[in-house]
Length: 212
Image (cartoon, rainbow, N blue to C red; front, side, top):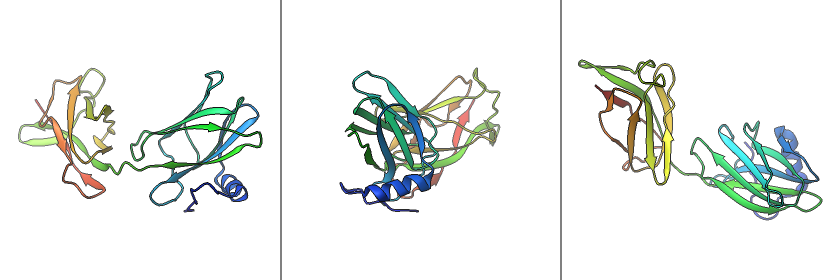
């Protein structure tokens, strides 16, 4: 994986080569192009953008250009005016939200998007419900929406748990005591929180227990 110098002097030729090699995603229209590359703030390596959402807003008109699914760490946005606000969200919570105001010159702009890691814990597990003395994978038929709606709350943020047909899940959470609740279900949580305050590992395994 390439590592990128993230200071003020990324060579234009080197940047162009990276964009071409990555098969950069492109969106928008207009004469002003900003060529972006997602970079990890800790390692300087290109970021693999599995869950990254890009929005560029034209400050002159308010028009938005977005990319929902990046193919690589590189992308190009074309805008009709030079003053642009760039916002990037990582829905996996591996990185903090990114925001920048850009002024694009007529020749275009090479811009390293330095994403700052949250250092949240990746919690893996299954949603289990109690049957007598046993714990079994939750039935997807449970609840109005087809499965219990489980949400974690931290800061001003809430994250809904999306689990698979086998009741397994992965979610990133801060290293603290995180409140959790459940809706659309006759079941209740065995504990109304997940305590990750003492966790030093990057990945932990914890199941979510639902009780009658």
